[in-house]
Each structure stands twice: as C-alpha cells, then as structure tokens.
Amino acid sequence: MIKILIADDQAMVREGFGALLGAQPDMVVVGDAADGAQAVTRTRDLRPDVVLMDVRMPVMDGLEATRQLSAGALAAAKIIILTTFDLDDYVYAALRAGASGFLLKDAPAADLIQAVRIVAAGEALLAPSVTRRLIAEFAARPATDRPRPTALNALTPRETDVLRLIARGLSNQEIAADLVVAEQTVKTHIGRILAKLGLRDRAQAVVFAYETGLVVPG
Image 1: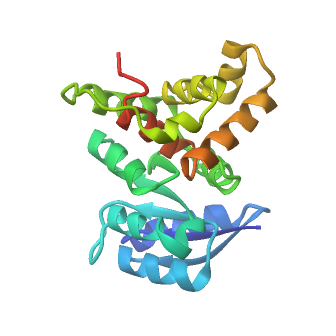
Image 2 (image 1 turned 180 degrees about the horizontal axis):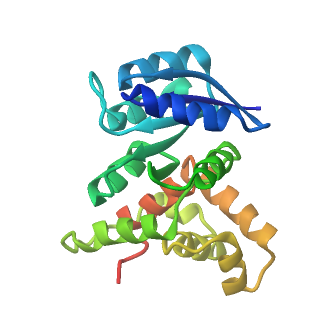
C-alpha cells in the first residue's frame, strides 16, 4: 500500500483528495496537514511514502517544507507539489527544493492518481510542459562559463548521453529509441547516474544537468 499525507490549508481540498486517493485499492491516506510545519511534523510521525504538498500555506509554505523533508531521515518521503499557480518560479523552486513532481490542482483525477503511483515507484513526475518551463528558466539566465563538475567524470560516455536526453525531457522509451537500446538498459543507466551523482530522482537529474552546464538551453 502507498501511504499518503495531504498538506493543504483548505479543508475541502484535503477531504476531496483524501476521498479520491483513499478509494484506490493500492493507496491509504495516513494523515493530513493544514500548513507546512504540520506537514514536516506529521511526515516525521507517520512516515508516508508520498506527500501531496500545497505551495501557499500559513506558518511555513510548501517550498520550505519540501526543503526540510528532502533532507536527512525524512528524505524517503516523495513529494508532489500541488498548486493552482502555473508559474515558472514555482516549478524551478519546487524541483530545486527536492520535489519529485509538480501537478496543478485542476489536473484530472486520473492524473493525480497516476502521479502518486509514479513517484511512489521511485520515478519523477516531469511532464513535458514542466520540463519546458524548467529549460526556459535556465535559458533566461545570463550565460556563464562553468567548470565541468568533477562528479561528471564518474559517468561513462553513454551515461552522459542518457543524462543529456533526460534533461531535454525525453521519456525512457524515447531515450531507448534515440540510442537504439532496450528500455530496461536505459533504466539501468539512469539508476547508475543517480547513484554516482548522489541524486534522488529524475527531477534532480534535470536540474543538475542545467545547473552544471552539461546541457545548454536552445
């Protein structure tokens, strides 16, 4: 069973998401929180697999709560940022803080259910539109000459190719087709990339690729 905690300052949202997800045969809602501080405390107490995190909440916002939950012993919880605000700065800040996914609150119910299953399985929820906004964030920044991070030296040439394709928003299936390899081979490469670079998931890999200059927007 996938254990879920819902953090949102609106009771109706918590109840609605709770009813939807609690009705799934492979999910159980273990608790909720009305602000970011409660989300951190209840994640520590309840140990959910997935936290649905609103951005704008009192006491502590969702981005700061995500940063705290992505560090230390609480890092096992996967975080999906839920917001009504489709803004570039939220996308980047959420992924940079350690979120594994980003979803608008008005997304179809089926998308939310699938998102929970995706991040619970250890994947990142990066829709093409989210990746495009992330790329646009870096494209808007002044170009700088960055030294190649030494961590990249641990990657094989093929792993480096896979990381570049991840950063461009390609799915595992698309990467496999581009490199003419099996999809399982791609998954193996991604696992090794994350381990060598000390990254949590695909979302962090995208941020890493652009921040280090491995991939340049355009």
